[in-house]
Image (cartoon, rainbow, N blue to C red; front, side, top):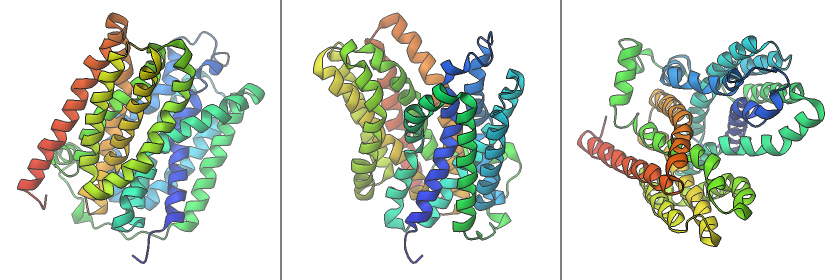
Length: 391
């Protein structure tokens, strides 16, 4: 490779923003969607969550599909389909139809978040892969922040259809841009990805200490991050709540792109994840010690977000660090999508119930085992890799 293609990497990151927008465009305006389907009740929640359920069911399957079909073709098809689905959703069809469209959108989302990191890793020199993959890891938080700042005012002024139309246009634009920038990828050899079927392929992926490692560490992060982002602002003093809710995602991004990239380059992605989890455990203890009051609580909440930023970036950087071949990277990205959706789906309701019962100390009982579990899991997988370095 002559050099890192930062323009292409930026375009792929933009595609990631549109994929995250498939979640954000409903999650951020869920209260504004109630008048569209009055009386929908709990079914309205499916408009948001069905995309994540698809990820739980088919995340690893998407990785296998990308490995077999090729990341370029899969990505471009997913962007075009995503644009068409968002356009159809802008018609605000009956709720049952919307849920079906959102389920189909979940497949588009999966294909993008599996194919794009494979192409990013292939577009960066080895020394630039930590920075490129860490940049990719920010796509979700950035998309939610943009949608909150731009999307809600747009919906308030012009209705939900305007946001869906805007999203469709952005996805179509990403597809057009990448169709120009992406050279036709080499065909993946069939024997490099052949398996004995879907179940056997899943078994092989999760049995591999290289392919599965990024996802098996990432799930501990996703169990915590969305839950903390959602619930911690309400567990500290009222005067800090608006500030923490606004700034927490930004702190995570800044730490990930700054300290996270430097640490990954110097010591590797896996150690960066372990350091981030260890730091998270310490600052959770600091938060609980503060009783949610004063500047110490504010500092602790921000530090939790920053420490988890190390885990976020390191987990995605581990995809290319631990896996040299494109098919293995696609499968690793698919596993991250699958277990990541498990974490984001389960973490918030579990922590909410715990804090209802025990208040702020529940954050420690929730987070500490997850931090220690993630550190131990990566240590165990590293020992397995040491015994079979070519696995």
